[in-house]
Image (tube, rainbow, N blue to C red):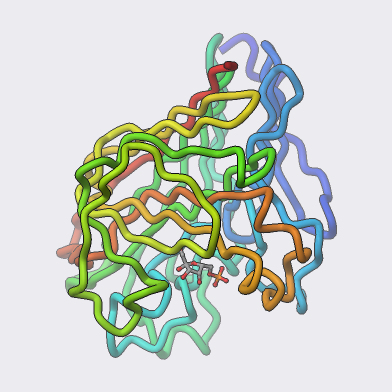
Length: 300
Ligand code: TA6
C-alpha cells in the first residue's frame, strides 16, 4: 500500500508511558499505550480530543491508567468469574501488549496489538493457567475510531471470560451531556442495588442526564446510542456480541476518593462501555470471540 510509510506508527512517550502514535493523512491522531493496549488519546481532524485522560498520575507505576479505553479482560470489576482470583477488571489493562501489524489504506489506518499467556507474570499464571491470544485492532478514519477485540483459546481446555471496552469519553461538562437511545431498556443500578444484582429497572426517559454518581449495566441495549454535548454529537455503536452497555460517572463524592482523578475530573468524563458481563463467554479449544465498539463524531 503506497501510503504505508507515511503513516507508520511511531513511538512517543506520554507521561512516562510508551505509546504508538498514528497520524491520519486526512487529519486525526491516535495514541495507544503498550501497557494495556489502551487508546489514551483520539483527536479528530479539527484537533479536538474525544477521550478523557486524567491529568493526575497513577499512585504507582504499572497501575491501571485512568482514562482512554481500558480493556477489562478476562474479568469485569470483580463480579463475573466468581472464584477466579483475578485483579479488578482483569489483567489486560496493566500488562504490556506487543505491536503485531500496522496497515493503511486511503481512508483508514490501523494498528493491531496482541497479548498472550506468555505475557503473564508467574503471580498471575497461578490464577489464570489458560492459553489464549487477545488481539486489539484499533482503526482510525476521519471522525471515527473503531476498537475490535478478539480472544482465542489456543489451549486444549475451555475457559470463561468477561470483557468491557471501558471507554472514557471527554465531555465539556457532565451537566451539559445527554445520552440518548436507552428508553425502554432494562438496567441494573450498581449504586442503589450493589448487593442485589437481580434488582432491575427499566429506563423510562429517552435522554439520560447526569447529576450524581451513575453506575448502570444496561441489558440488551440498542446497537447505537448518541451522546449530545454542547459542541458535538457522538454516535456510539457496539457490535451484537457485546450484550450489555455500562454507563459510569463517579460523581463528585466518589471522584474525590479516587487517587488518580482530580477533584473535578468527574465533570469532564462519561464512560459508555461495550460490555459482555452478565454472563461470561466460554471459549472451547480453538474457538474465538470478536466484538467491536465504534465512535463517530458529528459536529452539532
Ligand atoms: O465500569 C464501571 C466500574 O466497574 C465502576 O463500578 C467503577 O469501579 C469503575 O468501573 C472504575 O473502576 P477502576 O478499577 O478503574 O477504578
